[in-house]
Length: 234
Ligand SMILES: Nc1ncnc2c1ncn2[C@@H]1O[C@H](COP(=O)(O)OP(=O)(O)OP(=O)(O)O)[C@@H](O)[C@H]1O
Ligand SMILES: [Mg+2]
Image (cartoon, rainbow, N blue to C red; front, top):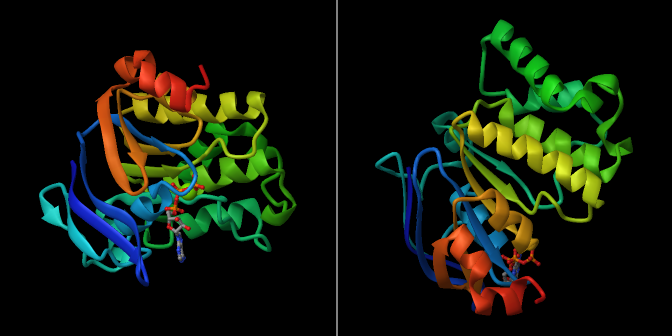
């Protein structure tokens, strides 16, 4: 579904992503793990076209998308849940969700989809008129995921959904991510919490200083001594 070849991202003279190659099959959940500054967010931003790649190709469902404008990616079925959530703080939960469906005109289906988001995250329903800026970090993460789902994506890109959240909240959010994936959505998950990410995904890539240094099935990465030492604190 997604085929990335030789992707490069640079900020001025600094190379953040140095020609990485990876793929995600339809229906798979794949994770990209790595330390701070490894280039994970830069990779996702380049995929979502929030920044221009310095080189390489990104094919999605057989089509080159590395030069499309970001809003066209949404229509193609790609949604990004950004690092730090990026909810609109002065809009209510409902309004934030509707922003996620801005490219759609099918009002009834949009309503049905917001009900679906509310059934995934009952906490959002209870607070549907509350301003997003007043939500807790975990609630904002739920909202960011809900908003992404409102575009009916085929490929969901998640940037560190567990960041800054208490274990119980992380568990809740990952249950939803898992259920969305089980329902057939393709997911590319970026995480610093390598253990969690490898436990929920099928395959993983390890990123270090802008390069992919290791890839395998997630269960094998979990058992890999190098991964255990560097990323699982063992
Ligand atoms: N806007 C920017 N301008 C200059 N350098 C940047 C910019 N954004 C990122 N970088 C640099 O690019 C490198 C990769 O950053 P990136 O945010 O992609 O890492 P990351 O793997 O997502 O890290 P983290 O786990 O901390 O989120 C870092 O060295 C960072 O300082
Ligand atoms: Mg990041």
